[in-house]
Image 1 (cartoon, rainbow, N blue to C red):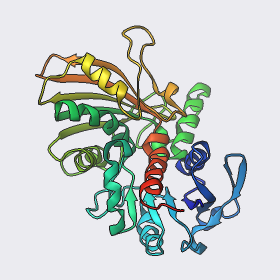
Image 2: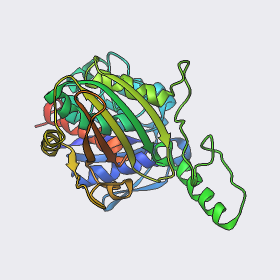
Image 3: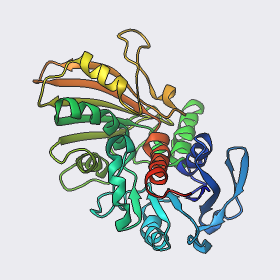
Image 4: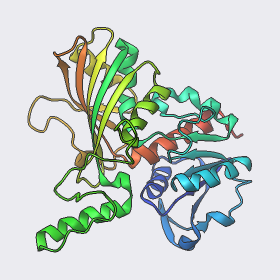
Length: 339
């Protein structure tokens, strides 16, 4: 007997990926339902070799649904996640709305799968920010080995993290430059084509952006509250795939060779680290893959027990859809067992 799964926000970038990954991983679902707002009702979306017609979230009865995978934004999650959860359906939410709620587990299965047990408090589990998700997959096994004191991370985040409209904006601006048309910016704060923007989410009083704060706060919640972390988050003209330059300071000695071997054995990670041309992974190569790729592992000689590494992952997958479905897989195997 399988599960009934609803994908809320099925017409968006992450919703499409959720449907793709459910089919690819042969998730044990007897029925998958695609949901979105009323204006998308009747739209067709792909699920494996099937086509699903989108139903309206507002009219849907969740009482016989086991899991709702939500990727419809914070305001929709705020209104609907508690309502869905109250009907007995476990919500796995991709928005930032519930991440720092002490009664809602924030989970990356390779890092803290045991936290899923806390879902019963509100029937909601939160997916972390895309940039945090891929980073903590790499930090976890290194932290277990040598105990991380401090992390300095600079991100190179693709426009898909800001939604389909931002992807369209990169495309149209790039074309406009080639044909000498005016550059129109609507989705991002500055021109993104042939440019980088050191501004993701809103600014906070201390000068950090909310994205930078999320990386710090979510890492502490999932991995270790003692870890100090500072981030600079940058939007780059890449369609899909987030990259991160990560500097780590440890309490205990660890060599680059040790780190390389530890990461090779760690779940969810592929190490591609040759000190030669093309001996590393870039965003173009990670698209469509489940793994978080680690390259450029090397000692930082400017601090005691320091390492640098390069971390790349498909943000629509590990940063969002894949992570949510991995949570659902653990939920089904360990907590919602059906005969």
